[in-house]
View (cartoon, rainbow, N blue to C red):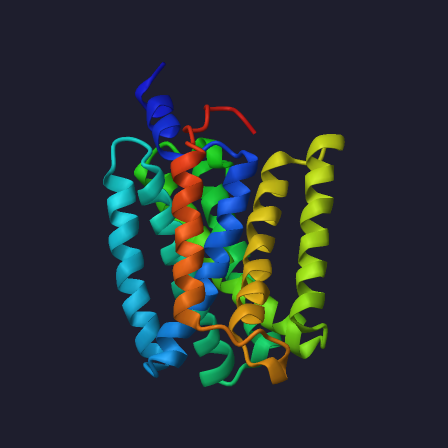
Length: 253
């Protein structure tokens, strides 16, 4: 096995059911923690974005420099992308006044651009080719854009489209089920299905997070953002602890 394969095996987690379960919990945590920082602590979207961006940069740097796969470091980096994505999307759609539709369109364009540049540069956007620092940089930048898009898309579906948090959660949950069926029963590109699922878990987490902490008058449960965030973090740690993850094998879908 060459060094590149060893690097890939040691840095990218296997795409199992527990991966997707943790991903949904992580994206929900990103929503509640982002709102706790920007709203409950009254720091605002811009200041909160700078704080979470600093955490994101530190986490990504540590992740790229790591010589092998560390589950806690990997999921810390995922959580960092989803928290900065939450506050950044809220800043763009609310503070800049471009709205959920404009924000979703802009971020979708940035996501596609990131994937296109990644593909043009390295010839593949498959997570199984993430075996060099350059590929990993593309991987994390793309993930950050997908997390930010997910926040705006979740808000657009729940608010602008008028489906509410539960209705939006059912829509995104149904789409994820459809992707899972396509994965097992069709010949659709596994790479395309991965990114579709990865993107859709974020708006699902966003609307579930909003459902937990938004006021009852707005369709939420009005739970404490800090308590909800702590509970979600606890569940994530328990999942990592009791369901050990292995590094993905090169070439596996």
